[in-house]
Amino acid sequence: MSFEDESYDIVIDKGTYDALACADDKSMSNLLMKEMIWVCKKAGNVFEISSGNSDVIIERFKSIIPDT
Image (cartoon, helix red, strand yellow):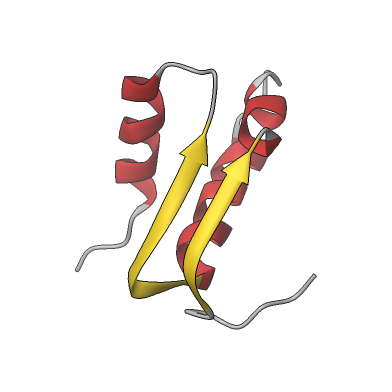
């Protein structure tokens, strides 16, 4: 699917990150995070519903979020 940048007020993932994070290569889970951020409006919210370690997920998101 193709979406324009900053298309949505809310972006929600439940399960996709967990499935991709199981792989040895983390590039696909990083790409998922980048896409979630890119399609979310600047004042929007990204919700990640995961069974993973929240501290690790938050740090990965922080490393991907563009400088503001």
